[in-house]
Length: 449
Image 1: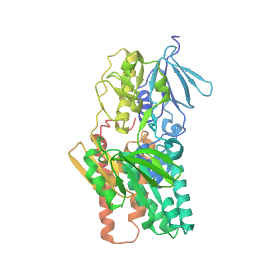
Image 2: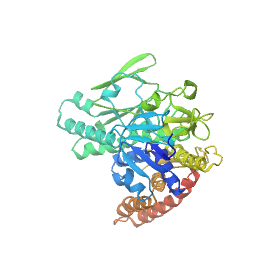
Image 3: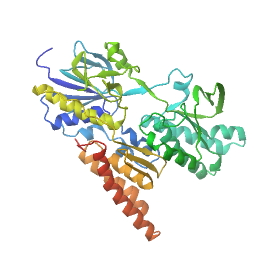
Image 4: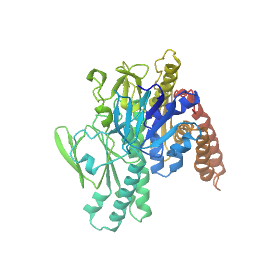
């Protein structure tokens, strides 16, 4: 390796990659730092539902990397990774550019996993980024418009049935959001909102089974029931077709005629991660990289990995934004220690609570398994908490101010019942204050890096 090449390359601008980059520059990392991502914008996935429902705008949920990095000194390269050469310590990009490195951070995340379900990748819409949200919005509105113009009851039922496949947190949150949105959209077109049918298919016997949000299951079930979401459990999707979803339940195959299917049933290892020359004993059953407690690859200690594409040896932390954020900070600390000749420390990532969106103005929060809040106040706490976690102090403040104006001032300070105004202003202030405590409870020792 050329001693002149002292460069840290970070692949992926999610929570792990972006926080690692910003933390390195804050620590005055002696090497140049390059962050590579195929998109121009950071994707704050926990708030994707809020972007889809237009409760928050693109700038709040998906700020540009160039804005977030600002004058940090981190070079941002918008490109797609073509290959990672661990032996020669270089990364090749689709543009033809080659990035040599002295240290590498692999934070490529995961991809949608379809697990061999026939037609799923062709006919189901995923829900992972802004393009998916836009595609789903377009599909729903097209179906509603066609249903409004159709006099055929069978065709209307087909067009007005929306099936979410996957009973995990994404499926539950999306089902609740659609149940609040879609009937209202159809009513605005002159249709009967009672005709809209939202179906959630869960492979497990219960929604959120085995998930970190399990403590919030009862609240989630109640919210889905209130919104008339049809939950079908122990139902394994077997095929997705242009106008139907097939599933198996109790040994029998059933079909739901539906023009729209959304896939939230899981993720798979990133293809580039699968292609790395890593021994099988250093991969988990999903193909993710097993890293040491210090977040390094056992066979390549100059390479760190975190987030959805890695799992820590001896731990079983879920691939959440909360964990990815903590791992990004830990990777930066250890990279700094490595170049300074100090001892590396195990990453101290942990789950200290969860937040779930359960409709347009409802949510549930479980903090450290000690405090649970739900309803509209939980909704305000959730939004304020996530905005407090944005990685740039300037963007953080701008987003919080806009959120407070949109969610509180414009909505609750219009002429109406004075008692309601006082209630909601007080609730918003409490929510913002609690959110700050939640940020600390969820393990963010450094809100902005």
